[in-house]
Length: 356
Image (cartoon, rainbow, N blue to C red; front, side, top):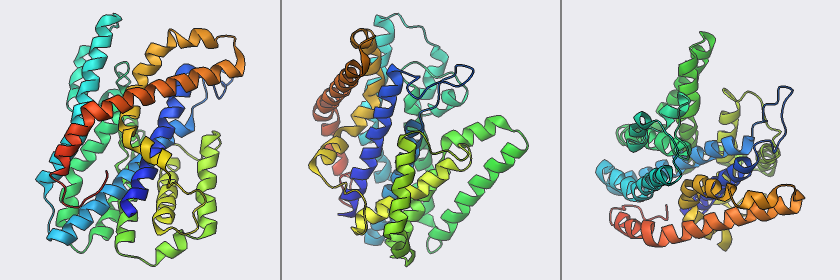
């Protein structure tokens, strides 16, 4: 039951991210402009990735802990095989699809950046501001895979001190980022801000607390804490949550998501119940929604946006709805015919049964 609720929440925030970028991709001034004419940032799009990283760290760490409890060890080989079978088929298919679109629409691109995407390092072009068109969003997949290059080993060999070591890891990461900022080492600040390993560690700490049935869980699942957590989510949705984007916002959001996930899996004092068939369905195809949405926006802009120009609020709602519907449809087809066969293969390497 824990894995079900956690997976649903994880996918929900991934879809929120996509919705934000569909809106932002069609109209990048949706939240207005500043005095210099620069568009206002869409906070939910950025923070939804933070939410996703937190939830990923929680889920994967909890599964590793259950595996270690069940077998007294962790099969890192099977872990990587599961990741490969779930991530690679759609990931590389999409890259090929985008390259075809480049050719069909005669889109110029810097082919020297392509190896970063092939080798799951799309965060590097993002940091250097040289991302390829319609592939930029793959940076988050790259970050996640880079984190899991070492995290299973970290869990495997941290015997009785995993919680302590995780907290130390989080603090060191944060301290290094602050020092880099103080000495104006901007490229390192950007790298650490984008990479966000500390956010996945927040999720891992939450998983450890839950696994150990720590007493603090009762305090984190009170009605007051849940109201605070959902208030932060609400402020983010309306673009009003901001303290310091590079140093505080992400960390606050990470802990907020841990509070929410603990409430959902404990079934205590939750403000919104995320257990329903619609969210379960969306969760199942959400990887496809995330991956495909940039090219759906690109292909739709040339056609559907002509309808919305000067058409007012109703036409915008129609266009956004159509684009999301198209993305859902493509994702359903992709899940059934591309992803599902590999998911069946992945299940053969599962030690702890789950729906992730």
